[in-house]
Length: 407
Image (cartoon, rainbow, N blue to C red; front, side, top):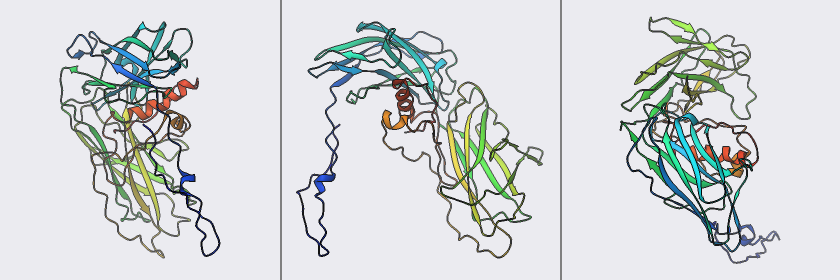
């Protein structure tokens, strides 16, 4: 789609102080060139739902070139699911055969909490492009199926067709949804971090933090869930993070110290059973030494959750805040209302493979404000994570895992 911008008549206005305003049109972005390629996906056959470890379905994948010269094309299919669990490369069967195209190789890879299929000219390497003839087309037969270990609480499998070379116009029909059998209630998983930043932790007192996991679907996970809790430094803050002790309340009513990662402000509470529908983990937070704390210090806690087996990349995340304060001689923070729980993650900005490729190393985690629901399942930002990973493929780099968030 062409970039939209407001055109303005050239202005040269002499202000009272003698300055000259630059014409607004000088700041306008150039109109993006029209992309010459379009993708057409055929109807999968045979019709009917896919079963785990069963037969695959095949559809035609065609790319057409409207330009008067050959255009590069790097086809790929981004896998997504409407279930609660992340998917891995082993969960998807993927095969590509050329019809009106050069000899082709393919592979399916795990990226973050999703999977993607890529195909490329045989013997030329994964970063190679196909050349679509001027006013011509290329086509392939693509087969997709479910691996025998496709997650029990995932339903339909969705594939979005795209072009790593970014020469293709997005169309309304660039996505195929493969029905999965048996049909299940695929409600999402959610994670909430409940804290109270208006109840400061002082000498001789402790704060409480609740980690709440909930599954709204009718089928539980295939493996236990593992959560990591960490203290996130505020951007630009020069305040030293006080040393915390975190304990977990057991079923016997006693607190035990939570495992801490050596040299890091990270802790790992006990795993959540795969059979859970709702699980509240109560943590007690205290400070070892208040020396050097002269005024209230707000700390951001971030929780991320992944499976203990299979695709262990975190697929849920949430944030909350706590306050540490000395006992006397300080002004307590003013009370602020807690955030209202939300069932969706915050919006993800539009991105491109080129912009994401530079950001992969840093990564980020889907989070929300105190007490709010975070990422609610594996589905979603699959496209954004896959864009980043595929951008690295194009650059000849290794595939890098990224967190996904629901669109």
